[in-house]
Image (cartoon, rainbow, N blue to C red):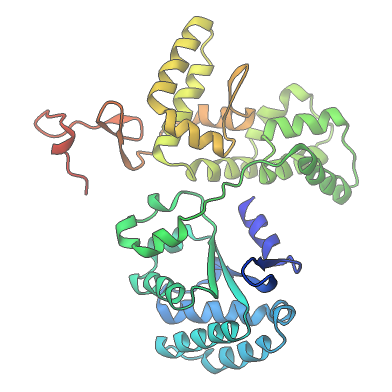
Length: 360
């Protein structure tokens, strides 16, 4: 969902922002920097990949300011084959200077940012901070993440970059019903088939309305011959490698605390006894309230008037996970006890005082 959303933003030619102080529109160029195409993590390669992204978006830049494509092309060709980081960095700064001179704003949309953030050289991360400091009114960043930034790299190590990137966080969750039905209609058109309203509704319910899951499930149903009984859909979808892969991606995008909270909530919800179920859910809420709040923000679980609910395909996947990720070490603020995922940590010597536990 997030990559599709970011791609849409980068190719929406109507995007402009109003300047409240001057009462005019500012040319805004959101440029996608696909970090999957980063052949190396050294500074020179990073600068040139950014320049290449700008070069490939020349038509988009022309809509912002006609002189920008020529400037970008000349500077990119000038350093395309150079490995000296000073040259490529200087070229990138010249491009930013051109944006500044023309009163335009550049938004570098970097996706996926997770692995890049974990493995990038400190010099590269410092460059991102430095460029933003030098061109505050000209340069902005949007990054695509599966986990919160603090779980990928020490915020202290990220320094000011963490403050810049963690200012505004938008969580991409499932689609609304109308948009979900549009995704289904695209599959119907492509496959030359048609689903009933009831079938479409069941597809949305099983997948929670998440676009990647919904498209996978819709393609499966369009190709199924004969069409299986509705009661067997969940089991058959879970057996498909494409669905398992996408559910695994969602699971791996969670923190250890979130995985632990979902796992115990799933176990509590499956209790056959209503009394035991309510007791277990109350314990889960008391221990994992903050993780549950984060999961609700992503709509991976919902607290409704009828109680907690995890959409069926993900609930079945979570129930089958044999090992919960250890995750990062976290402190329960209510009990002053440390956990890694769902496992309580006891310091050597048996002392449970929080002040005597050193986190490395």
